[in-house]
Image (cartoon, rainbow, N blue to C red; front, side):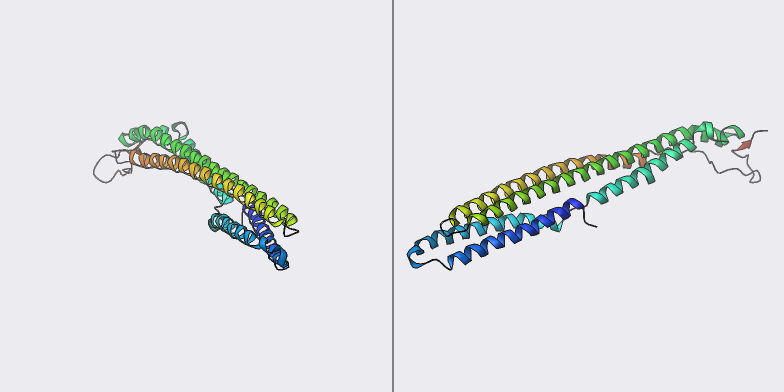
Length: 254
């Protein structure tokens, strides 16, 4: 499913393409009717149209690649919600469930394993709380990226809209051969402004994604460190046997 802002920008892009083609067609049609005594006007117009064609191509070169890799802010938000609900909330629930005050093992068993277990549980609860915190940080990071992506496509939509307005005005101005040079100037100006807006949007987005990449690298390192430091006991917490020749590390309280 295409994001709404991307779809809107795509519609404006199609509209712009039609308007530019209308302008070129109108100019070509007018030039085909130029009488001999006005033939001196043709060459400057041809040069202006060639320069305009290059400017328009520069614009489309920048825009086309964006539509090939538009990103998906809706998917980013969906993924961020999953990190919160399926990782963060679940880790928080487990951390609460293994609280010593809620564990029967804390009051119903004694022995070496029981004591080791009591010492281990708080640290693992803290670890699970850290998992929740990191999941929430990932959610925030992904949501920030989604918002930046929406802002980017909103800016692209504005750039396309500016060009459309310029093209419409140029079509209206190109009603006579004498008016064509001014019309070319108008649409070329609109193209230049739009290219500037697109370039600014791209630079801003690249800068933001660099910040997000640094942020997510730091989160990834925290996850790695948590795995390396996960609290483990050096006692055999599974030894509940009373028939293996040694005393059990667990003893039930009477």
